[in-house]
Image (cartoon, rainbow, N blue to C red; front, side):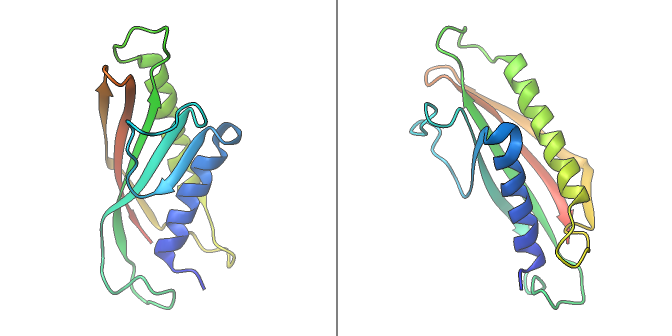
Length: 147
């Protein structure tokens, strides 16, 4: 049986991979954006758990657990574009994050129970990053969940 924590992470990964028929390369763990193959995958996302409750993530646990999730979403700045941050591209990434959060909030497991009981949108934050030398830009989104 899948633990609530793994179920939430699976929904995050699968949802990101499904956006626009595979727009995102999505994986658990850090990604080196300087070496990332943006030719094969125009967008990438690293899925990380910043912190989580310990000892209560078993499927049979009676208590709810929580975690802080960070998503590092990145893309290459097109070669013909100015190496400045491209807000049009970033706005598309923000839209994808909104879609992910909506999907995660509505997701259910095979028993029909919510995968996530609470998604803390009010405390969610996003930080933009940009490296003009390597022509990479993106956002890091952090949000809390209870499962």
